[in-house]
Each structure stands twice: as structure tokens, then as C-alpha cells.
Length: 591
Image (cartoon, rainbow, N blue to C red; front, side, top):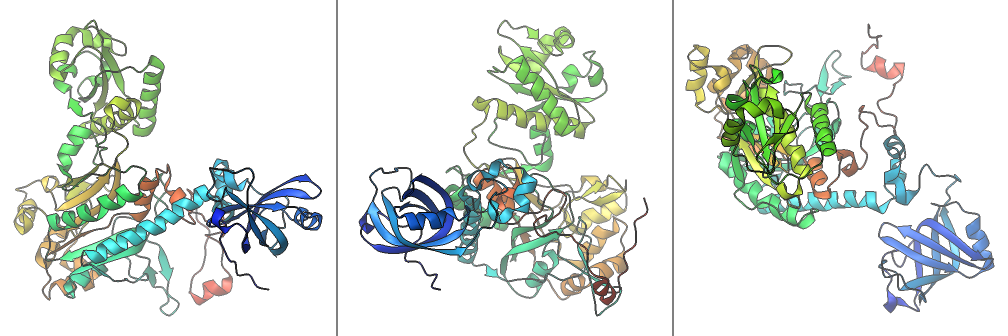
């Protein structure tokens, strides 16, 4: 059986009228008008073509088929009498001489209508992902992903980077998330780990004498899902540069990303170099977030001095933050929903009042603001028609809640959000250390392999008690676009002496460092170049470019929120023989 085709279903035009053709694809729909007239829509990867059946025998053959069967149509192209200007092939139709069944659909009912699959329940879509992907609207995200990855690859090669693949089976290392472990058959009781990132390998490449490395790297982390994070695995544009610092990394991405975002994105505007640089502490104070959406022109202001003692209970003894919106026109119903949404997302309440056109404070907590109205107007720069959103709590909580409030106010007030653009910024000078939420002890805030601002001297002062470790910043940076963190990166700590001192502050001695990172520690002892890198997430990039609400829309075969592949049945059970070969016994977990 010959399955070759002369044209695709998106290719034929009026100039092809009279030609004999062979098309192949999925039978999307059939509409019978009479016993010897029907209209069939044939779909393949490239588009659709109308097939007009004028033969009773062929029509009976088609009637015996279920939708989504694959067929080949041999026939002649002719001009359509009723053209469809919304379809690239809308000027022509094909009159078949014969139809061959290539793959019969054996089900009368589909789980969902192919062209409306996005309206189906997500669990059903993921179970029948191969049907979901037949929907051109779903498929186009995956096509775009391929084009963007190719553009990223070409841009990095043009920048002088060399594509190098790094191992998938490696050693477990403490990099912030849970590892996926792989038992070793040949070494009983020992495990490989899937890489959370190629972090150590790319740094080792720099010590090996490679100057510029990149890869579209698969990464594996046993993390819970979020709207912008897929559980299990993801891909990143991983890069590293030798004899380079922070500005060198910034310069590369500021050349690579804007043209790609402008070309392939839902918006044709993207920030030009240089991107705005915002220190972490300033970002938290000004935007209430370390991933601010700079399309919004609103900022967070401190209102503690003027409102902290106004007599409103939740403000007493707390930090108070305010977001002021001019020309505010939202209704009371919209304000109530806004406050409810903030509380759901931030876990903290939001409060409000308005400074109306009569220069009076009204609504919300206005009665508590009234006694200090003049001071509040001056401190917050209020003008008639302003809305003031407020948050309170310990400083970090007040800041973060204000950040959520700011973002939601921006979405509510189009006059304060220039939405149709990609606004990039760098968040710099992250804290080197933090107090762990679970441990209550000093831990690395981001990447443990980052170079501290102040080098060895600042670490030694912290060890001697002369400097608060929490005040130490690092050459760490995040790339943010439209309120989404695309990547974290850093200037690496390439000096073994500084590395040991940095880990000593988190209760790991020299022997611990040698044991946990033997290859990197030893390599650095042979003379390592200063180096820096970053790794923007490919999945998040595509999510931004397509305007998708969840990251699962831009991944060909995503897991669900519970890290399950419901299509393939993973994770699944394995046989006792497989377990025995790996020297593994499965025991019931105690409740």
C-alpha cells in the first residue's frame, strides 16, 4: 500500500485546479446532503481541505467510518463555488475518485470534540493527550516551542557558545529540591540521582578550559506543581561563561531574548538592553515582590508612621504598606472581590479607603483614617479620586501581601498597566543566607555556589560575629519578565577557600564540602577561572510567549498536578523480579 501524498491539507490553492492529487489525514467531519452528495473535512498537521463526495459508493464507504479515522483521498482539485475566505484552502475543493482507509477509528464516541478539546476537563485532556494535540489550537503551542528552541539555539551559537550535553545519571547533591533517585543494579544499596540542573557539570566544563557552554537542558526535581511549574521535569536554556562576571551574562541574554520575544510572542514589544537592575531589598520595598511586573506603574509605599497608630487594631505594632491608585473607577463589588482574592493568594487581609473628589476619606477603614487624614494625604501624596489599598503585619508579610495587592490592582486598572509588552528586569544582590522555615537555622538562600559580595573577608567577619550573616549579599540574580521569574543565576564561587568558609556558616566543614562536592572542590584546587551563568526556563518562556495560563499548555506530554502521567500510567508498579535485581524491597509506609 502506497501512503505517500502529493500535497498536504494546507497546501492546495486555486492555481492547482485541475490537478490530480493524493491527500492523507484525519477525517474531521462529514456532512451528508443526499445519498450521493456529502462534504468531508480532511485534516492533517498543516491544515484542512474540503472533499466533496459526489459518488454514492464512496459516500457509503465514508459513512461506515467513525470520525478521526485516517484516510487517503485520490482525486481532482476544482474551484469551489462557495468559497471560504477564512480558510487558506477555502478557494478549492477535492473531488475524490477513491478513498483508502489507512487507520480506522474504532470508537463511535470521542472523549471530547477535537476542535473544542480545551473546553474539556483537564484530567480527560491529559489522559487522551494524543487526541488533545490533534486540536490545531493546542498543537500550535508545541510548534511554537520548537521554533523558539531552534531560535535560542541559533542565537547562542551566534554568541560563540558551544552546545555540550551533560550526564542524566549523576550523584545526589543538596541543591534545594528533592532528588529523583535511581537505584543501581551493579552497586547494591547505592543510587544515582537525576540532575536538578547541570550546575556542577557546567562549572566543571569551565575549569576544563571550555569558554562558553550552553544546552537545552532537561532538569528533574521532585517538587509540587504550580501554574508556572511542572512537577517532575522541565527544560532550561543552561549557559555558563568563563572569565566572566555578572554584566557579561546580562549582556548576552539582553541580546538573545528580546528579538525572540518580539518575534514569537503574543506582543511585539520587548524591553531593550539594558534591562532595569533592581536590588532585592529595593524590589521588596517598592514592589512587594522579588519578581515584579513592571508593566504596572503602581508602587508600594510605607504607611507605618502615619497609619500604624491610627487606632485600627490590625495595624497596631505592625508594618503598614500602601498602594495608591489614581483615577480609580472600580465598584464596591470589584473592591470586595479584590480583597478576597488577595487574602486567598497571600494568606493575609487587605484593607482600603478612598480619597474622593470632595477631599473626604470614605469606605473601608475610613473612620480610622479620618483623624489622621491630613497627614495621610501628605505622606501618601493623595489627590482627589485616589484609592488606597493597605496591608499590615510583620514586614516581610506586609510587603508580600502588598505585592499581591499591587499585581491585582494593576490587572483591575488598565490605565495603570501597559499590558501588551514583555517587560524584563534583573533582580540583583540577593541575600546569601536566610533562616530556614523548617530548620530555623541559617541556610543558603539561593545557590550555594555563589560568590559573596565582599569575598572571603565578609565571610570571616560573619564567622567571628562581626557581621550578621543575613546582611551578606551575593552575586546572585534573577531574570524576571511580566512578573514571572524566568531564571536564577550567579557569579560562581570558584575559590576553594571561599567555598569552605561559605559552607562553614551553614554548619558544614571542609570535610563535608569535599565529601558532597568532590569533583568540583578538587577541580577548583587545580586553578579555576572566574565564571558566571544562568539558566532561563524554556517552559516558562513559552508560557509567556503564548499567553497560556498554565505551563501544562506548552508541554507536549505534561504530568498532572499530582506528578502523574495519567496517559502512560506513571508512576506505576513494577514486578518483584525488577525489584529483586535492584536489591529493593517495598514496605508499607506507617501512617
